[in-house]
Image (cartoon, rainbow, N blue to C red):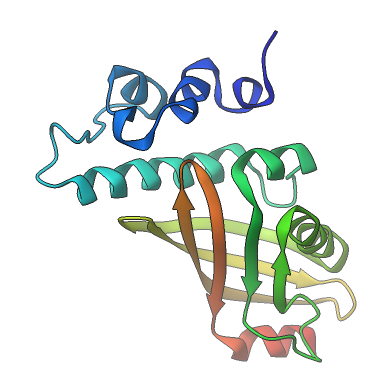
Length: 184
């Protein structure tokens, strides 16, 4: 029977996830992530191979999940149990989503709040950058806040920290000006 990881990522990825990070350099990785896949053998440094591996992992997450369509099962598959998700920093009395969410329950709460409080009208990835265990995703997002009926566009930077094919930390950075206008 297929495991949760196989259902989400496919059998090849599950085999990769079970292997130590250093041994993931193989045609299996290339098959899952697509060519060209940078391996420790082909990279000028191990850090570059790790960066490419983590970039491929995060890119796959964004391809697999439509905004607002993430299940609890998927959260447990791709996040570590003690993962943190920070949206905009500390809690904010105007922006109901701001704060730091901890573990599976916290990430589930945050993603539920998104569906409850806003509509994501547009979502476009502009660029991705990786260095070692850090991956940055630059997005343009258009939200409509349900309680104000206001729409705003904002550039977000999602900073991921990845360890062994699990996201352990996500911090979402953005310009507060259009966000506050949308929530006020």
